Image (tube, rainbow, N blue to C red; front, side, top):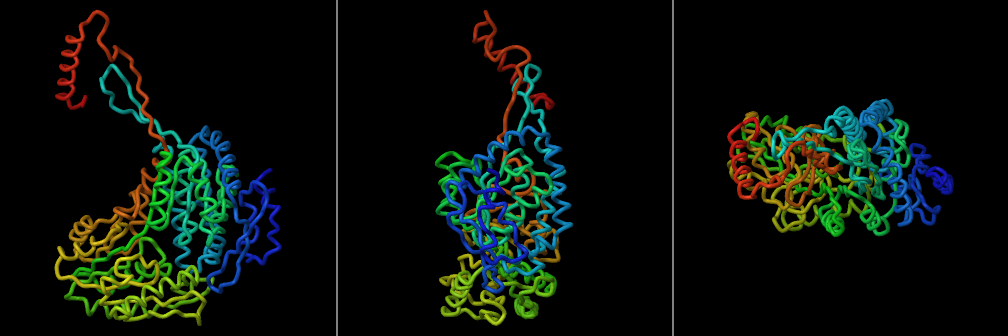
Length: 529
C-alpha cells in the first residue's frame, strides 16, 4: 500500500485543521493505519492547528524498508540528475515562499521575517549543493604508495539510509537543508520531526516530490521519541540530530553501540564581545537580532554579551532603546519584529530563568514579563545585568529572549570570559578594526564566529563548515563536510607493475634494501612525495 493510501485511512477532516496545513497529513508514512493521534498547536493562539497520526515502531520500520528499496535505484542515477531535482526545489521554494512561511508560522509562532530566514536557508543550501554535488562526489586521483607501480583513486559511496531527528525551532530549514546533501550523496532519508512542528517537515516532502524526488526516498514519521527513537537508531546507517546537548549525548551513545556514525548540532551559551572601538549603534542593532531572533529560540543566538568598560554605559543605553522598540505580534505578514515562544511550557522555563536571576540579585533593564495580552506564550525581550554566577541564566542555555550583559577591561579578559563555558557553538566580535576582529574571533572556542554580525553571516556562508566545539556537538553541516559525512570514503588502488613482496628468487634482505632506497628517493623528489 502506498504512503498516500495509508495516510488516507486517517480521516484528517475529523479534526479541525488550519487551511494552511490542510492535506499535508497524506505525506505521513504509516504501516498499519492509524491507532493514535496527536494535536499540533498554533502558538499564537494556543488553539489546535491540526491533528496527525502518532506513528509507532512499526511505522518507523516500514519507512526504513521503503526507503532502503528506493535508495538502491536512486544511488544508481547520475549525480547530475539528482542535482536537477534539488535545483528545481530551489526555484519552487522561492516561487511559493508564502506557503512555506505560513506553515512555519502556524506551528512555531515566530514572526514572518524570522520565518523567512528558513526559506532563505533552504534555497541557499539547495543552490550550493545543487551545483557542487557532482564535483564533491566525483572520483579523485590520489598519490599512490609506489609511484609508477600503482594508481589510486578516492571514491565516495552513499551510506544508505540516513535517519534524522529534527528540532522545532527551525523546522523547515533544519529538516530539508540537512536532507539535501544526504540525498545528493545518493542516500535515502527518514525523518522524525519534533512533535510540536511536524507540518513543516511534511511541507518539505511535498516540495521535494513536486520537484521530482521519488516518494519513498524521503520519509516523514511524526510522533514521540520514546516510541520512535530506538527503531530509528537501530535502522539507520547514519544518525543526524539537532537539539539539546543532553539528548544528543544520549543518542550519540546509542548510535555508537552499533557503530553507527552520527553528527550532532547541540546547545550553546553563545558569547559576543563588543570592543571599545565598535560602532555602538551598529553593534546594538546587530545584537538585537543576534539575541532575539525567533524569540531567542535559536541555537546560535547570543545569550552572553561582554562590553568594554569604556563604552558599557553608552552601549547599554542604545541596546535597551533598540530592544524596547521591537514590536510583538501575531501577524502572518511582515508587520511584527518578534513572535512568541513555542509553547506555554517553554514560557515557564524562560520565566524560571529570569525569576531565578532576579531573586539572586540580577537587574532587569527591560523586559522580564510575559505578555498574555498578545498571546499565551509571548515574553518580552529581556536584558539582565549583574547576573549572579549561581543563577540559571548565567551558565545554562535559556533558549529564549534573554541576554545578560557583562563588562571587560582588556582583550585577554574578554577571550577568557567568552571561552568560560562548556559550550562552543557560535560567537560574535564587534570592532571597527577588521584585522583585530578576525584575530580575536579565531581565539574564541566556537565552531562559528561572526565579526560585526551576530550569527547570520557565518550561517549563510555555506561554503564553510558550521558546527560546535566542546559540548555543542560533533560533525559539521555546510561545505564539503556537510555532504561527504553522508558517504563512505573508499580507496581503490590498481597494482599495475611489480608486486608488494620480494620477486621470486630475490632474498628478502636485498628486496628490503631496494625498497628503502626507493623510499629515500621518493622523499627527495617533490613531485613524488
